[in-house]
Length: 140
Image (tube, rainbow, N blue to C red; front, top):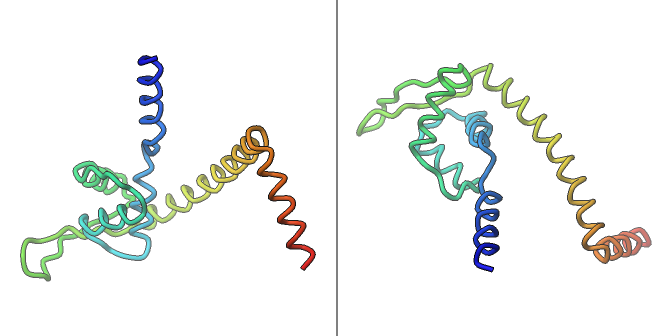
């Protein structure tokens, strides 16, 4: 019994982890219309649902994206205090972001199919309810 509970906990941990490179498209999306410093990017990611962010990982990823020419950076010394690195999306980064969006649209379709099949297989009463609601809407 304890072994099953332990396995269940391990499965839940694995399922609650975002895909490995999910951070990259979200960083690029944040930079699509703005040039931002790392702290602001981290705040935006948290607002988008990244509940636990390793700040060091974000900065390592930003350096990697810069090496890959997906983003560029420059130092901002205009405000008082220490200089801040400001990140911007490059043309190549924008092209890569479009590719990510296309891939995500395909994943979204696949996930929609998965949930439709899952719902019909395990919750057939949900489909009956949805059909009845749709029929009621069309009569108006």
